[in-house]
Image (cartoon, rainbow, N blue to C red; front, side, top):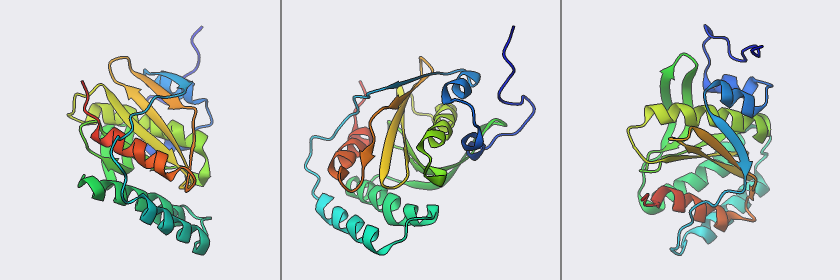
Length: 207
């Protein structure tokens, strides 16, 4: 006996709609034709010194002291955007904000942040500070980006964040499988580690 469908075939789904689903991420991704696994990821890291880390750390510390981070906009402006601006500015990499993607009625919407490097990296803010449902939304966006991008690299990277916590994911395109990292990066405590991973992903030469 076939299990009832999670997604209504004739319905339209924006990326934010996936956040609202109460089903397990594995079941949602399976309906989109993808596998899913939670595991400790071996993410690329830069081998170069990160000269701007101290200045950025001080800026984030100040933001945490003077800003009420209850709202999504506050977390985005105070914590998320400064990190991505610093990383992309350091290597002169384009950063797209509120980037529109539409590949089907069930896979469409706006990516919070999209870095169109050869490896592709997208970052989304977890609504209501919910990293679990946020990752379900991230997975849907990774699946859509696989069909949208003209890059042929085997892995697309993503991250979901509340501003002070970051979790990474990978989409293996040939296998159509999403991996969710079991590690969380805490900000500002693990800022240098986070920056190393972000730079490693964006600059990584794929073989």
